[in-house]
Image (cartoon, rainbow, N blue to C red; front, side):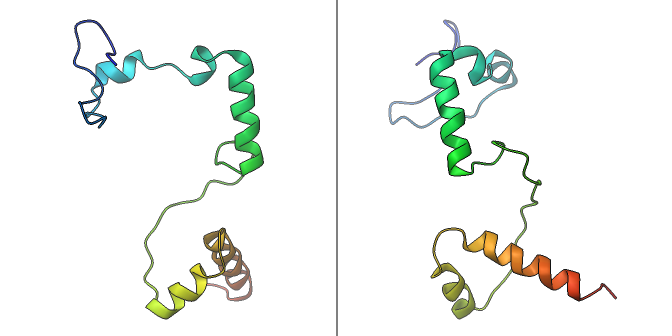
Length: 101
């Protein structure tokens, strides 16, 4: 698939996407502008049902790294999908009851 008749293809023969250039980004358009309205509305509704970020008025979260003992991480993950959200909820409650020094 070419992004412009004189530019390099966006993908190689294996389907890997090449590094995008500033010119590539300038040509990009929001999905709402390029998809049929019914398809776009369906995708938005599906994302809202799935709780996809950006689909509602949820607070923005910041990605970070934290280290856990292997057995602690295994126990958290074993609770299934949404374990990170549950950890965030527990930490939010802990912060409320433990004022910063």
